[in-house]
Image (cartoon, rainbow, N blue to C red):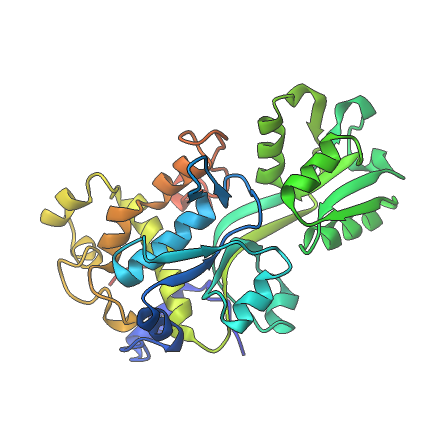
Length: 342
């Protein structure tokens, strides 16, 4: 049976019971032998998550997490190839081995687990599915949109979420399904659709990027709450551990105030045994993962902690100025927390 590795207890039991992987698992070994990590991009611009800047370079929180995993393995974020892949092609690309993992604003769902046979990491972003409407329509909630048209990204869970939510409200909506985000948003902003259903951060970014915020309302309805996860092929627990501990390292560093700017200073004089182990001063951080003991130090040095990644991708250091909201550490009222280092 596949398991979602959300439980701290499961990880600790595995380590204390001698079940840790002393050597690289098959996926990690394949990646190491190849000399680079193959990770998903987007076939267009998914602003804040996977986009190409004016210099032709990839950026966004999903891309940053790809870099973090590559750095954990190789000590170098450049040992990474980003492949532009559509929503519909992400699962075939993963299953065929075209990519090593999917970091592409992808939710953990029952069918992806039990029907497609995929496995998931911890959630790195918790977002809601929202709906935007042209203000001139005068809609207060989605219930007022009966008989309207809604633009929805094809190949995603949002179509089912919209169908279920509309059925609960007892309304009928015509779906306009378009895969590429740019084409989807063009259809909505040109008036082809009355509504635009998307993941909440994307809706907010699209409205802000358009520059006419006063002409569009984000309705109060919440269609679904979706945990975004790293998605992997089944049967390789070591690879799931690498993904989960990479995420945990980003959160642990943020929790302990370790940044890309001060990590060298802290490594020279670690305040606790846990931090000493985390930064590779004391042995053991990589032993059970098939990674070098300084892998977490390399991640923070080259990529930064989670707060740094969020800030430059979506937050105050980005054009989008988004708040962390639920995607904050537990100590700041959010849902993110690191595993324990013992």
